[in-house]
Image 1 (cartoon, protein in one colour):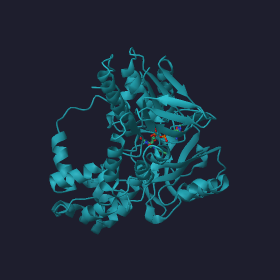
Image 2 (tube, protein in one colour):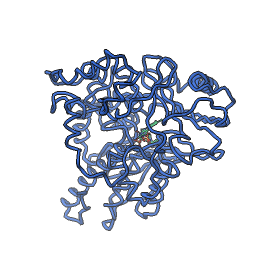
Image 3 (cartoon, rainbow, N blue to C red):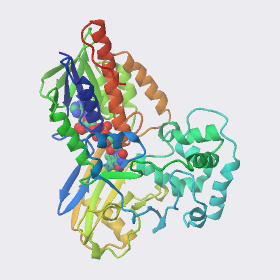
Length: 485
Ligand SMILES: Cc1cc2nc3c(=O)[nH]c(=O)nc-3n(C[C@H](O)[C@H](O)[C@H](O)COP(=O)(O)OP(=O)(O)OC[C@H]3O[C@@H](n4cnc5c(N)ncnc54)[C@H](O)[C@@H]3O)c2cc1C
């Protein structure tokens, strides 16, 4: 009986298993086993309830513009559970010399799309604003090749725009260092704008002209969550998979070693010593964890995987009586430019961002610490972390009261950093993987870190494995497994 093993039960592995289940409908007798080392599924997606509050430890939103997330929500029958951010909590701010300055309206990407809010923002000096306007006249870069996010944005829009506005906006996604991140791997759409339209402002204007008059999207837009947080998504996926007799979910099942025999089949050895035989395997975990499992398969693949670096991060949910917060909370929160060297990277005003996350008399915040080059925060003591966050909220929002709730979450080596040369490395990895039919990779280490990207990665990996199994089945002239369309 054909057996596919998915290693890792985060959103990537769950998406892979869901895709396998929908094709492996498994009249042909194939089975899928999902092996997860933890006691729970979901990976970094973790939602809890405490003291009348809904607490997200890891991600809290899905970008609706990337279709894989919303499509999965709809498939699981959760469309009516989608919650958008509160309309009154519009925009967010940047911390500039101790003051919260709103990000100008119309800054959805890196180029301002509305003139008046951009011209009047206090975040930038006049020369910096003029420099952004002058981008229209700059020729595109002559040579190809990779470039850092910092170099690209400074070259096109000027240093002040990068340091004060773009870097904090971008670091919210990667918790990364813009001088190391690859523009080609992180924001290829910007590179395409420069290449195809000779500049970002020109590209933005052309895009707006194209979009003008097109019908409003029927699906939700912006950043969304579910009524009970993102844990509702992974919970629904788990239920869907558990109800399929051909899928076995095993928790506390850490895979320690993986080997491949001369016939191309795999043997996974669990920490318990048990061996699990598989015709195909999907790694759905951070690249460094995949590297450890690839060691006995292909040393070169293991080395390439190990070179994708990961940052650690800490999130702190912290709640106060609303009456103890003297500063009005405008927007969804704020981010902090890296040049300021402050320990807190960003802070979300959770109870302002989403309705129903905390009782009406409570202000719930979520602070982020760590990120690239600052991963040591993950090893700080709880007391240290709480003092840092309380000092931040005191200084920025004037909150001096005792918190009503504190919840600290440490995420070690979970935020993939797409550093310079990332795309070339991923291409080399793909070539090594292709030499082992039946092996496929999913996760946030390769082609996108957001939840929709991870879902798409799991689906791609499942499709690759199904194609190999179908080809093998047709060679054996037995009943073929359907191949994904
Ligand atoms: C704090 C934080 C905030 C974020 N915010 C957002 C956001 O708002 N929106 C967004 O779109 N994205 C966000 N992201 C990114 C996104 O959440 C992640 O990229 C994505 O969830 C990763 O999913 P994954 O399944 O690839 O990996 P993971 O969630 O890391 O899951 C991998 C799983 O594999 C298991 N595993 C590892 N090794 C083994 C082994 N040997 N055997 C068995 N199991 C193993 C692990 O236990 C884990 O459960 C955030 C990430 C973090 C950390």
